[in-house]
Every structure is written in structure tokens, then in C-alpha cells.
Length: 426
Image 1 (cartoon, rainbow, N blue to C red):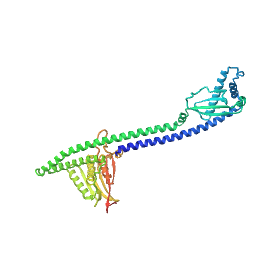
Image 2 (cartoon, rainbow, N blue to C red):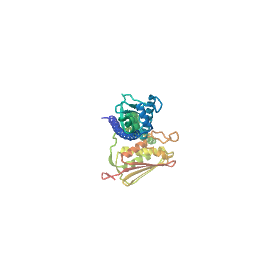
Image 3 (cartoon, rainbow, N blue to C red):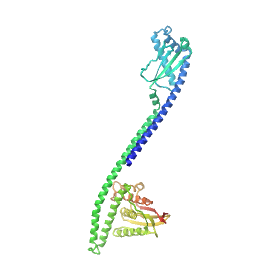
């Protein structure tokens, strides 16, 4: 199964799992809201019952309205019933709000035989989903009327009411889930877009570098053909041509290897070697090459052997790259290399007298394609691949690379690679 399909399945399962967990929390929250609502209704009902049990202005008004006796108030029966309905509505609303209930309601004050009743100013349709809480009234009213009196409180859309009370939980949760979905989709889209870009770039690099290999081979072949016909005076020039061709070939190989790095292909074949003679030959070749230029190069190598487990070609390329950088970024290059064995590691230190690298750039120079700029210009042409390649090679050797630099004073790069002894790193 492709990784993309695996990521998609994991993403969908995770979102569904999160939604199910959130739904369960929502159900628990609604159940708690129901319990809390019932508790508050019980307390409010007790207050309402206690008030309606005694004779007071409200119960006296209600009694006259139920009996349709309007002589005391000197108004019509309809007006009396309407006034008592509104007063009772305001009274119930006040008691509910005191207990923290602000849900819409209607009511009906009715006798047991339903011959007398007072209804709420607001009456819901019978089709509405209503929840009824009956309150049996004792005391003054049932004694006066000679029958049981019941106050029926009716609430509608309580599920919506419960959800509204959980908005502080549900709305942020939904927003967070939506945010997670958007963020993950964006990350996956960006990831696969970058993978496509990398794949396309690597295909281009592979095609380009393979095309470059043909003229490099032709130049190398032509230089060999000239070997027997050239004079001794021009022989050093031919040597330079051959060295530069070899360098160009190495650079082409390095670009191809970087593409392989991106694809995570295994391009390292490690073997245990004594790196001392290899490093010494490398220094001699570089000194020979720089002798034709205005470059001062000195090297000091501590006594060997330097037994390490290495991919020699890549390690040579990495060190050559550092030496080339030291030469390119110095106006009158003075380059020093020294090696020593300490604390179970081979340490290689390369110093130059170049322009140096600022503190901010020191943290970024090992990133792929990053280049140190001088204002809006780059002092030396390049692609920002060299140090990224060096860092990866050293890391593949379980080593470490450090950089110390000061502006206008120069740069020192230190490589530390574990030594091998009796088949083990030391």
C-alpha cells in the first residue's frame, strides 16, 4: 500500500475517532444539562408552590378569575382573566430566572375536573414537542374552589436549550476539529506538492548531469590524446586541464548524489580503511593545483593510522568541497588544514582567511540552496549545494561538523569522525 493511502486512512480514522469522542462528550454534557435543569425546576416549583399556597394578592386575583367574579375589581371577566394570566406569567418567569432557567415556557392553571382554568398568554401548538412539569397547588386555592388545583409548566425545544447551554463546549470543539482538518489537509497538500517538485527537479538534474557527462568525457579524452604531442613547457597546463575536468566530473557526480539523497536511496558502501594516506594524497593534489594560483596552502597531519569506516569517494568529495570553498571565498587565500586523533575521533580542521560568515548565516549555511549574500548580491557564483552535501556525508559517517567564523577574519570548519578499533567505534 502506498504511503499516501496509509496517511489518508490514518487521517480519516483519526478525524472519525475524534468526532465520535466529541459526540460522546456531547451526550454526557446533554445528560448533565438535563439533570441540572430538572434540579432547577424542582427548586423553582417549590418556590411557586409555597407562594400559591397562601392567600395573597396574586392568589386572590387568580381565585376571582377562576370563579369569574369581577365585582371586586370592577372590570369585565375577560379583562380579569387576562390580567391574572399576565401576572401569573410574570411571577413564574421571575421564579424560573432566579433558579437560572431562561427557557421558553407556557403554563395552564387548571382544576382537577378541568371546569375552570387560566392559561398562559403564549400557547404552543399541540404538534410542538412539549415537556410538562405539573405542580400540585395546596392551601388557599383548592380550599376556596373545593377541588384540586394543578399548575402545568410546559417547555418546548429543550434539546436546543440544552445545546445552547453547552455552546462553550460544542462550538470551540467543532472549530478545533475543523481547524485540525484544514491544517492536516494543507500539510498533506504541501507535502505531496513538494514531493512532486522534488521528483521533477531530480529528473531534471539527472537528465542535465548525464548530458554534461558527455562533453566532460570528450574533454578528458582529448587531453589524453594531447599528452604525447605537447611540449614540457605546456605540460603543466595540460595537467591543470585534466585536474579541472576531474573536478567537474566530481561535481556532476555530487549533484547526482544529492538527488539520490532526496529519494533516500542508499548510495554509501562503507568499508574500514586507513584514511591517513588518502587524506595525505588529497592534500598533495590540492597543493599541486593551487601552486598555479595565488593560493597559500599548508597542511599538518598527525601520525596515523586513521582507521575509520567510510565511503571514501564521498568523504574525499566533502573535504575537497571545503577546500574549494576556502579558496573561493578568500581574496588572497591562505588555507590551513590539520588533522589529529583525539578522544576516539579523527578531527580535521580547515581554516581560511576569507570574509567570514555572520552569526545569523552560520545557522543556515548547511541548508540546501542557502547562500550567504553580500547585500543583494552573491560574491561567488554557486547553487548552495556544497555545504548541504558535506553535512549529509559527515552525518552518514556518524560524525559531526562545526563552524566557527568571524567577519573579515576567516572561517574554520571542524569535522569529527569516529575511529574504528578492533571492529568497533571508539
